[in-house]
Length: 407
Image 1 (tube, rainbow, N blue to C red):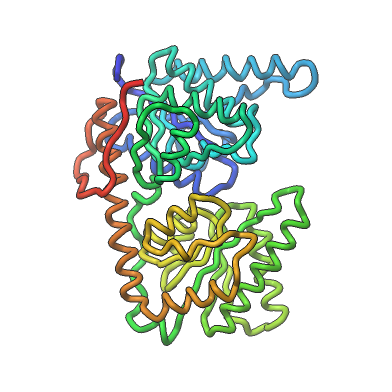
Image 2 (cartoon, rainbow, N blue to C red):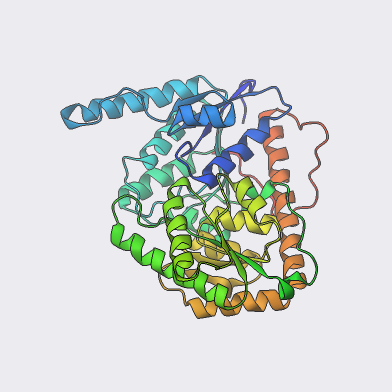
């Protein structure tokens, strides 16, 4: 696959915009180069933010000064293509480190799908290895989105996906190659908390609730509906006798989380509800210290929890949440964000608390296998790129194997 020494590697992603999972995925990608002597370059949506946060050089996905409006907008798109070509030419390999960047639902063709298509096209033309590692994929979106994403997937030198649904979506997009499943890159992280004190699930249960700003910037009605539902869920959990910690998974979520806590405390000033300061996946993991269960919408809040051995219930919005919950042994605990029954969620939390030691042990065992699989993939990628393996690392046993090579 390699035709030149790999000294500089680009990491492409929707980073710098405050999504904790995307930033953690970039961190996981950057760890591929630790101890190898190769130099990273982040290709980001907000490169100044990424450069400061990750201490790496960074450039914009798009041409930073190209025109965007009116008749000159087409010239801006051409400038973006040329800019991506220069970026790819400046490196020896390109990596897309995880995330749901190949999920096309609600995405416009001229956004990330356009950039991914040209990233892959330039990598192919310039003979730079393109590695798509543990990416999330769906086969939704407009025909234009599907075409662009399908071509980018097909042109990759290495392609792995983070769950079986993503593998099926790759095939549905017309890609005639296998897509091995390797768990989400963030599942390669080491736990930072200890298991809760034995017996505390019955004497002092703590449940974390991860919320999100589903309304975005223009859907106030949807935000209010979601906030009200989340407030009702927290109240129902409190009524069941647990303490609650409210978590976020993106900077945008803060206003919803604060409003949920405000409403709960307005109705009961003594309510046992907390709002820890969470600004990363690692912060979320630390905020789960002593927690027995997480109920969450954001995918990487769930990832943080299971990697810490915390059983989860999902109130999500896509197949990625359902796939993760099913992989950890309880498919029935994945619910739709807009239609979940708070009573059923509380009942499932009670079920977990009643057998917490066994539930947590199963989660930890699965997380250990996933951690080994992610690390084994990292070792294979380093060998493919001729980077070697950093001293002191081990691969362990993995339940997911395989990479794809030839285009």
